[in-house]
Length: 100
Image (cartoon, rainbow, N blue to C red; front, side, top):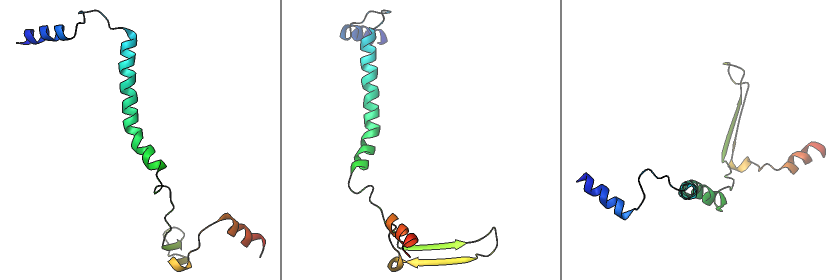
């Protein structure tokens, strides 16, 4: 049975035994399969990176800050909710530093 399968494969795919394949055919098959694998991996990454919903900042609604030294009790504790949070922009920082 195994010999019959080998003979049928030899008829369907005529490649002499022990004869090396041509270099361009090996590189074409290997290169195309490598590019296919890279495309399969990178396609979802590029799709989500270029989408409109990805990359938009999500603003926090609660911020808590504690200042402590080592394992001692906190020296300073602060909490702010959504209404008292301000979006950080460089111009706000610069104007508060130089114009007040």
